Amino acid sequence: MKPCRPSTPLLHYLTYHEFDRQHTRDLYRVSCAQFEKHLMMLHQLNVDYSRYQVTFDDGHISNYHLALPLLEKYHIRSIFFITTEWIGAESRMSEQHLRELLGRGHQVESHSCSHAFLPDCSDEQLRNELTNSRRRLEDVISSPVTAVSVPYGRWDRRVLRACLNAGYCQVYTSDPWLSAAVRQGILVKGRLTVRNSVDAAQLRRLLTATGLAKARLQVPFKMKKALKLCIGDRMYHRLWHAVASRDAAVVSNSYEK
Image 1 (cartoon, rainbow, N blue to C red):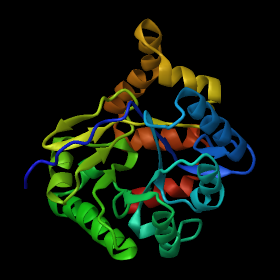
Image 2: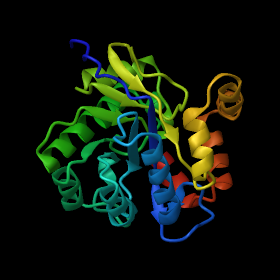
Image 3: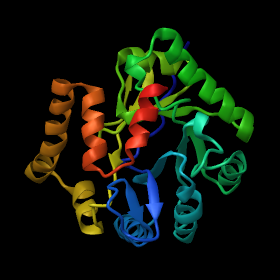
Image 4: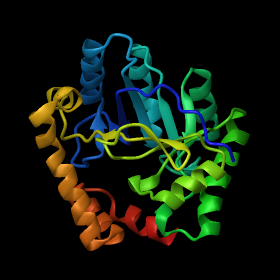
């Protein structure tokens, strides 16, 4: 397959997961008030948002009910990465929701079939995770699906080659300091995962820091990356769920698939 031609990269990519009307202990569930402050700050930094892209992973129903009205209030078009086996499940968006997102000018892209650790998949499993999710979404929204967000941010060269062979042109990761570049023939983009512990002022510093200030901000991510290498993905993910106050059942479901 021919390498995909890269688009002009934006400077920063942000990703969110779930939303709530109030602040919660779950680090990956951002309150509506907090999200709106983030959007207001982005508007102050750059009126037309050409330097920033807001994305969402997993397909949680709160993306539709709580985040979408705020996106429309600030005239922001976003990318929603959907785990296809979760479509229509409890607390997840339905096929109709996805079609409506597309109709409102947003993008609907892939987040694999089952949210598996892609580097751990066999060649056949990897092909199915990527190809079947793209085909399912294209059947639902009747529009091309050309981008994929890798679950847990995990990827390697084999995963990138598989993404290219499955028909994708862009791969989104969860590395906030990874510059957009073509790797293994496909455009790879890093993103900053926004947690509810990050207020608008902190987010602004993360997006605008340079030099020594930026290097200091990179230290926690580098330490986390080193920890993953030491203890492995699965053990790290169990610790992550405990620290983030996430539902333990999600951990079990992730490993069973």
